[in-house]
Length: 276
Image (cartoon, rainbow, N blue to C red):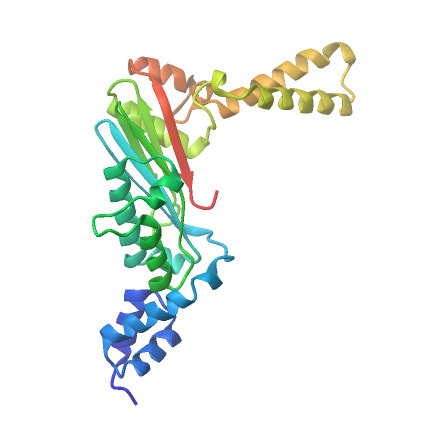
């Protein structure tokens, strides 16, 4: 029997995120040699990458950085929270974020093809993560905001997990406190657009149609249907438009009022939540 201890199995599991039985088998095959066992797990993992393609990646993390006029953020997914909590997965996420910060490539397909300093592509780095961690790893989305001050907020939904929600907010001029408050508001209330003018006309018309059909189904008087429909459409717009939402920290004010008081403007925002 190969000479290794329970601590060796634990160390190998922490290093690779592989299952306990897989770690024991790898150490047996490597005759107790830790580095060789890591290599065995990696090789076996590479062979299983295609088998993992259809698996669901509903866990993971959001990692972001904002400094001056540049903000970058990624959502990296995995299959289990065990892997999401692991150092190897979080190191992979940090490497990907560093590459995004360096390249400022905002389109995911182009970013996946971009080359790191060692000559490997981002996709190759992720494939290695698939192999080493033994799970399907997927870079779901990325965001880059550049050119004016960017505020950042990251939120942990559980103390033992990495951040699951991330928000970047681009402002027209520096307003650090207001920027953070607005980012926190976006994390909590999940608006879809900055202002009502950004909402596609088709969305508004579809909401108007649904509101009218609902009013008629409820038996509302014909003379009042038009007013009811417009009221519901207005409510819909306020619900998904950031600047028209009631501010999280003071419901008597809208986000627009908070922005105005800070003497700035919101240019854009991105909100990521793992799995959504």
